Structure formats: C-alpha cells, structure tokens
Amino acid sequence: MPEATVVVLVLAGAFSAGFVSGLSGFAFAMVSLGFWAHTLAPTVAAPLIVACAACAQIYAMRQLRSGLRLDLALPFIIGGFVGIPLGAWLLTWIDRESFRFAVGIFLVSYAVVMLALGKTPPFHWGGKLADTFIGWTGGVMGGIAGLTGATPTLWCALRGWSREDQRGAMQPFNFALQLAAIAAYGWQGLLTEEVGLLFAIALPIMVIGVALGVALYRRIDDAWFRRIVLWLLLVSGVTLVL
Image (cartoon, rainbow, N blue to C red):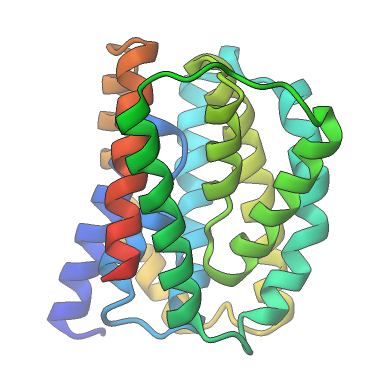
C-alpha cells in the first residue's frame, strides 16, 4: 500500500484534475502534475495521468456526446498518432524538469498576453494541414507527460472557435491520443502494478470531480469559458514552472 502522503496527493490531484477536465474538456495532465510530480516517478506519473484522463474523457463525452465534432478532430488525431510514439520514446531520455519548465513558461506567456489583450480577431491560415501539425505536437507532448491538449487548445483559441466547437474537437482528440499513449506505455512495460493500484485509488474521486465540472460547464457562456480556459492555462503554467 502506498504511503499516506502519496494517497492524499493522488486523491487531491484526481479530484482537482477531474473537475477541471469536466469543465474545460482538457488540462487533466497539467492539473494533476501539480500534485503528482512531487511524489511519483515520471514513469509512474505519466501512465497514471493518461489512464485517468482517458476515463475522465469517457464520462464527459457520454454526458456531452451530441456536441462531439469528429470532423474537426480528425486532422488533430492523425497528427497526434504520429507524434505519440516519439514522445513515449523520449520519456525515458528527456530531462523532464527542463521540459516542464519550458512548457510552463510558454503557457504562462500565452495566457498573460491573451488575458491582457482580451478577445482578438481569429485567424484561419494553415487549414487542416496546420491542424495536423498542431496535433503532432500534442502527440509528442502527450507521449512525454500526458500533455496532449496544451498546444491544440491554444490553437483552437487562436482560431476563435466557440466553446462547443473547441470542446467538441478536443475531447475526441484527447481521448484517442490517450488510448494511443496507454498502448505505447504498455509496449514499453510501464503499466506496472504500482500504476494499477494508484489508478484504482484515484478513479472514484476523479469521476465525482468530472461530474461536478460537466455540471458547471452547462451553466457558462463562451466568454466565461474563454476566461476560465486562459486562467487554467496560466495556473497550470505556473505550477509546471514551480
């Protein structure tokens, strides 16, 4: 049985990340890393994150299935599938502290600028080819640390997508890449007994968090959704940097 401190942090991270994921459709990894990176080895934290995040997406997609946009998600998914194996391979080689710091600085910078500027005119260059490339970056980051949704969510915001389109595309994208990451971790032998035990501990409280997040999502409009996403990115970035 894990130590009491580990169990408390796993439960706190699972509930917090589940709530944020249910509300925004992404950010499970960014929130949970703020709790789990303190006590769990990278090779334990990454598989635990993607396994929990995939279950969170299943629940949320069942609740909001009428809004799923597979047509928008497909280019991201194709690029992400190409990036996942590279990220999973890099997991055992890359300096994760430097990676977290770089991603954190990027998220903080983006969120601060966008909050200061307010709503900016959307741009439409690149088309589906650009979507595929952004999906590839999400796949690489997902393989390294479960951060599948960071760059695609920023891209959707820059394009000015509504909260329905953004969430409708990102939920199936994140779910597909999380399944691919789980397969890659299994191939590398990272789905250990420790990961399974921590997953069993985290799952029930995570589902409660997701349910509360989905309930709140149904009560907010596009403007509030945009502010919430930007603040979540800011807090997640600060957490990664610290």
